[in-house]
Image (cartoon, rainbow, N blue to C red):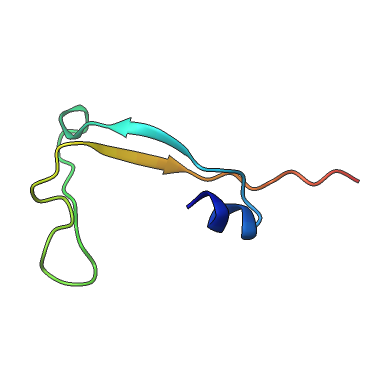
Amino acid sequence: MDGAAEASGFEKPVAHPFHFPEYPGYAHVNTLNDESAVDGETEFVTLVFKPKRHYK
């Protein structure tokens, strides 16, 4: 993931823990099909991508 981010002009992504109970009403939706990518998983992260700064 780091290499893809950097090749696209972004810094390496920063991962932050994501805990479902901290977000009442949150529901994960899979856009590809009716299956859920989170079923059976117990640890999740949110990735933050920032564009690289270019100085002149």
